[in-house]
Length: 250
Image: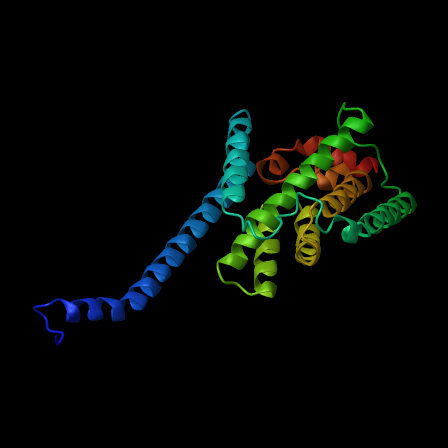
């Protein structure tokens, strides 16, 4: 029996021949939808960060937790489950050398500040141990945002490694405007930490080094310049008379 349109053989052959094309088209559509979702989530998350930075309290406190929830949920759901995101033990041992590097830079900064007579105590009433602990946790959160939420997402969007690292570091720095110390420092550290993260895929040693470098800036740069490590609206609203007194007293 010869295949004809009436007996259905031609229709089946036609369907079979177009099936791979349809599958490729379906896969391309799914990939495009995934890229759009990644881009929207990135813009929303980063936009929320900038809104928090430039919003006065008490509204800032509410927006902060909304932003944290958005970034954590969308960051974990969008992760590549075939590779670690940096919160496990993979790569930890190999990356531990970063910690003594951070310690060395910390003491070098203190020595320079002591020589320049700018060394001072940490700001605020918290005990030293609590201050260090809270800033260490905050450093880990910042590295999660930079590496897991921004950098990996930029790579999934198709950017090359050098371009993704540059864009991520720049975005990180923009969120620290107008602080004249943190903004350029973040460009350097953002680039270095992204390179280290892609090498080891672990956040803990990087966050520890971040914490030590941040503490170093907090006690070595005059508060009249650094405004107690504030960024955004908080930096601009820092009392001018207090900044002047602290700057001249160093």
